[in-house]
Image (cartoon, rainbow, N blue to C red; front, side):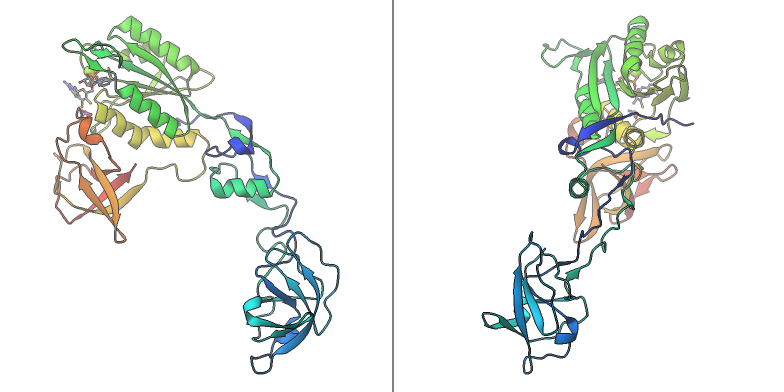
Length: 398
Ligand SMILES: Nc1nc2c(c(=O)[nH]1)N[C@H]1C(S)=C(S)[C@@H](COP(=O)(O)OP(=O)(O)OC[C@H]3O[C@@H](n4cnc5c(N)ncnc54)[C@H](O)[C@@H]3O)O[C@H]1N2
Ligand code: MOO
Ligand SMILES: [Mg+2]
């Protein structure tokens, strides 16, 4: 099953490129550094002039010019000569080593005593092309752009760049019991809270989320909503209506709309009735995630299954797989062992070791309250019924 469709690209300005994913490899015609330059404030010297000097027998050199960052050296440094130089300034011809000013003493206006010999030829010189050679790949396609990558793009004078388009995630909710946030609640009704969580989940994953609303538990209305959602989505996230109840229409409607259903349920708790489908007949190849309605189940399904799919669809090259971390459990963890079980809580780094603390209150997939502040999901594989306090547990980092 290949659920990853190709996503097209767009050109963005560098100032808007943070969080985007490069869609073309980047190269530069410039070497980095562009020219030999000084890594210290000090003196540019010839190594052979200073290699044996000591505080008792300093090398006395003639200072022939001063080179500040941004200026061009005018003179060649001959034996017995030095140039006053500052960090980032071009190394003058003839010089091959920098002595930092803490190791030098100015004798008079144009003579300097070098007190200690540099440890190697070329000390404190940043050589041309020692960081990067022109023409090589600077950033690969599929690179997520963050602060360091922005700096590289800028240094390479890349003002506009080609990135993958943000995936379009369309969200809707199913359920007769759902009302929107501003409505007064009648008995039996609850607020459609899932869509708020799903919209934020999608946005934080770098997608452009759109909310289509609440659809009643009716076959025809659900079909219309699904048809509308798949028409404009790369990924659809619906919640509810995927279990076995008589009012659960999502799977039936997907089939009626020609979907290929890849997954009808997963041996995962919470989040068993997860439906995953694609539409081979649609050119833009949307991926449909019918998430379970229980608020915890919906988000756990997102963290465990949707997040990797969304990352991969976004064009990112590395780190799209779920990240499990070994942690010491601060509590006894229980499962019935029948499904891969996720228990929610906090993943903390304490004195260099990860610790997992189970959220207090009910670990019930309908309990959205104690899901607050969750940073990790402890995973008990099928067949594992308990992990004792102090034992190691795999934790999905979220
Ligand atoms: N006989 C069986 N019943 C159920 C099974 C099963 O295997 N056999 N599985 C259970 C599991 S596990 C889950 S999870 C739920 C999933 O059901 P659905 O995806 O069909 O979701 P709904 O029935 O529509 O709703 C479940 C629950 O979640 C609340 N909900 C729904 N949407 C929202 C929303 N947008 N915001 C907040 N809360 C929402 C809804 O009111 C229900 O309480 O099925 C079990 N049943
Ligand atoms: O997936 Mo249900 O996941 O246990 O409430
Ligand atoms: Mg149901």
